Length: 183
Image 1 (cartoon, rainbow, N blue to C red):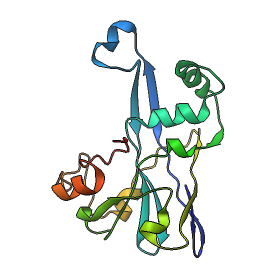
Image 2: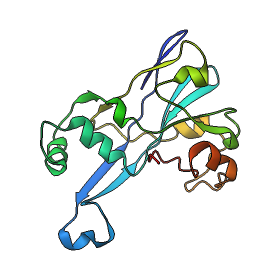
Image 3: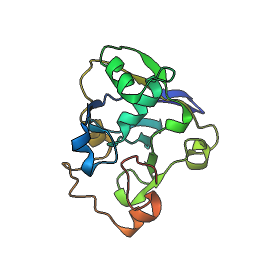
Image 4: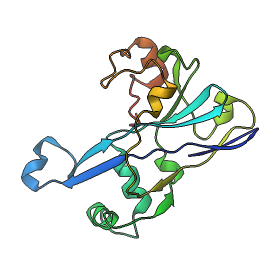
């Protein structure tokens, strides 16, 4: 993820593992989807200014970002996922597929979480801040671990025992859904 700031471009990276499995007809009774996914990793973090951070969240639906970004022509999602297994490529993520983004008014206080409009970083961070791009790369690198704990010292083991669904979180992030799923 690249962010333009008054002091230049800053970046953040993270490796997320996404495993997809296509369900047989008989397995779909509990799912409206024909794919099961397992997503492992953590949010991408960019320090946009000293002590001020932008987080691109990861969720169970992150597999859809990859499918959309790497789709060729009119191929089906299953065809795309099959092709992705051997592919090692980088693509720019289209704006309509951006994940949910958040920041904290005070990095040491989980109650200060708030959504960030990726089209208007200046509204959150001030003049001169703009999301330049988000890219996805298919890689064999290891999954990113521990960067969130470094920035968010209050973050505990998953599920986070310190962070509870509070009315403040619900107000700022839509029912405390910080997973990146759009609501």
